[in-house]
Image (cartoon, rainbow, N blue to C red):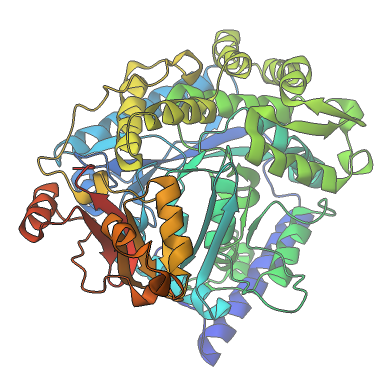
Length: 616
């Protein structure tokens, strides 16, 4: 869950003390490795579940701290945004009915979370990116008031020296600047852990990298962000950009992103892995250190390596190596961070089992995978899976193979073998891997969401369509069926609805606007061609400065003198505007009082949309 009592790493004495702790942690890690102190068996699995909280109108809630207080349970903790929480599952030995046992605990914890949320008229939703998140929910008021997050946000912005940039291109495109790391809060995942033998570190880690693309391709569940269809697993691009400490520059920048797949196969030991990260990524945070790791080791205790954990906690590899201590013994595990939350707990446990099974089922012919596969092929496979999901093709074993073929004909059989070798209950194996097989053959979460959203958009504006989508996901998740069995959204799923409808729910955001220096003749002709009755006018800084209406076409289109000028000379500048959160009733009253048929929707001076009498 991470260290919460942290501070920014600056100042001579604090920095020197932290660096000394970090170097001691590395030395202690090296000594434990050389003395063969690391646990090799039994092998354990674990998981962390992140989930979303939505209010009565299916929008992100800001009450995570109240829910956490009501839970009063050490299994739960907060996340960056006030609409997310996380729960940790107990690590279990990889054998027998460990997966169904973990599934029961997960359901029990989520039942407890739902009961606490229900007291506040909230719902728990499992999804990689909550569809109804928009710019309102990325303000600092939605950042969890915990010191760690404020410090991390400030540190990353200080390192960049500029606002964060978000640019993702898929079917649609999103291109935004933002002044905090809260875009990271849009992501929720089901982080899976698998303990590995430290003596086999490089081979195990490289195999995890090699299979990441194919595994991700059947787990995608995050195709939408702010109403845009982007990647099948948009979290991959979104998280990478939301905590990027590298500012754009005219110069070639070879530094690696803090969130990423990596740049080469792992070589050497796990100790070398951590050393490389210390070289590649500067430390961001420090904390109080009560014990020195080398002294702890000298006294016969296994140290927690707190400074190393702080550093590792701000390097977000999609396959991240973690150090831990269980029952007095140190261990190394791989944390799989690329699998999304949801859409059901059945799907999540199936994802975990599939990944673990393929990890343990590695065939002998793929030992030393770094000698048989180009790293850039593995990396390309991963990002292809994030972009295209089930439609991806992968470089594998010397050829280009469709995702469905690789998964069904090769990786699923490996998973069965790997799980049976670990004596996992055959009944569990059959149940959860059948979920994976059915999903590969039918439809995954991302495909269901895209098809449902397109269906809804035929009859609903974007905000309303996204709310219905949330309601539909919640309804189907409650029934307990895996996502491959879900019917597409019907359109009537929305039992909860706020009493007051707002402009945001009905305004148009995809509008044609003009700039004040544009040709009057051209703009008025375009309005005529497209039967557009209202065109907002903006300046070069995207501030709303005027409005053209259908009346202006009738007034000016046949006046040659007016047509030779810019629209600045004929536009209306005395405007009645409204905000997106104003009630629909107030918007109607404003139009009637001023005898107008449209209201530009603004945030400050920036144009956000337009609402017309027809919309109302």
